[in-house]
Image (cartoon, rainbow, N blue to C red; front, side, top):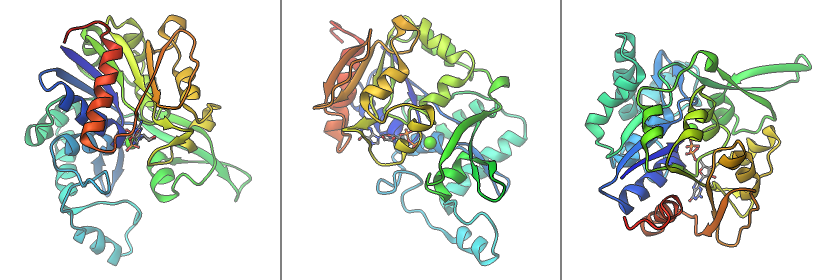
Length: 320
Ligand code: GDP
Ligand code: CA
C-alpha cells in the first residue's frame, strides 16, 4: 500500500507518526511544505521538513514540538551578545548542524530534494520525505504599515515567530511560486498512491502552500486514490498555534466546515473526497463524505486511531 500525505510542520509530523504506527508496512511519501523556509545568518532553514524529520526520527523536542531534544543555545546566546539580528529566531546548536550541512550542499548545487534525502539518511524517518518543490517558494505576509499608511511585506517567519501573528495580515504572497514545479517524485507519488491524506496542518500556510505549487493541485485532482483531509480546526479553534489568524485572511470561517468547504469536493473542482471532523463538530461540505471521529492527537493511541480513521475513509471496504 502506498500512501501520500501532504504535511506542514508539527500537525503534519504528528499525523505521520500516527500513520506509521497504524500501518507500519505501508510505503508512505510525505510531501512537505517549504514555504516557511528562510535564510538566517546565511543558513538555509527548512522548519517543516526538519520538524517532520526530527519527529519521525525520534529526535524531536516533544514539549516544544520543533527542534531537537536536548538542544543547547550557546550560539544563539553568543549572537545575542553581539547584538546580532535577528534575535527572535530559535537557532539551536544541534539544529545548526542540519542547517550547515544543508546550506553547504545547496551551495554546491544539490537540489533541496537531494539534500533532504541525504539528511534523512541519518534520521531514518520511515517515510519518503519530499519537499513540495526544489524551487524556492517563500510565504510572505502583507500587513498594514502605520508609518506610511500603506502596507509592507515581511517573511512569514517574522510575522509568525517574531510577531506571533498579531499583525493583521492583508494577504499572503507565495514569492517564487510562478517559477516553481513540484519536487521530483511528487506528481508520480500522487498519481500512483492508493490513498492521499491531507494532514491536520495549517490549511493556508502549510497545505495551501503545497497546493499552490503549479501542478500539485492538478495531480491531486487526477489522483486515482481517494483524497481524505483531516480538519486542523476542532470546536472552532486551531489547536496549538495561530492558524485561526490565517483563515480569515482568505475569508474562510474558522471551523471544520469552513476549511472543508475551502478545500472543496473533487467532484466540484476541489481536492477532497472525504473530510474528517472532530466528534461533536458538524460540517456540510457538498460532495464530500464527512465523518466525525476524535481528532485530538493527544497520545500515541489516539493519534494512531485518527490515522486509521483517515485510511478507513480513503480505502472503503478494503481488507488491508
Ligand atoms: P506548523 O507548520 O508547525 O505550524 O504545523 P502544521 O501546519 O503541520 O500544523 C499546524 C496545525 O495543526 C495547527 O493549525 C493546528 O490546528 C493543527 N493541530 C495541532 N495539533 C492537532 C491535533 O491534535 N489534532 C488536530 N486535528 N489538529 C491539530
Ligand atoms: Ca510550518
